[in-house]
Length: 113
Image (tube, rainbow, N blue to C red; front, top):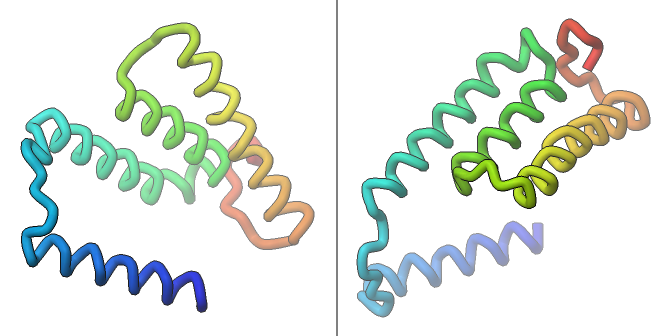
C-alpha cells in the first residue's frame, strides 16, 4: 500500500508539472514511436487471446521476443544473445515458480508449459 501510494503521489506530481507547463518536450512522439506503441498493443492483445490455447509460458516467450524486437529492431548477434535467454528462461522460471512451487493455477498449453 505504501508503494502504491508513493507511485500515485509521484504520478500526481508529474501530471501537475505537465499541466502547468514545467516540462517542455520537443518531438515527444514521432510517427515511428506511435507505430511501436501500436505494435506493442497488438503484441499484448495477442498474449491475452493466445494464452488459453498456448499457455502462459509460450505466450510469455513470444511476448518478450516481440517487445525486444519492437523496441530495438535489430538482429545483431550481441543483442540476440541477451534477448533470447531472457525471453526463454524467465517465462520458464515463472511457470516453475508459480505453477509448481507456489501451486498457483497457471494456463498450460499443449506442451505442458
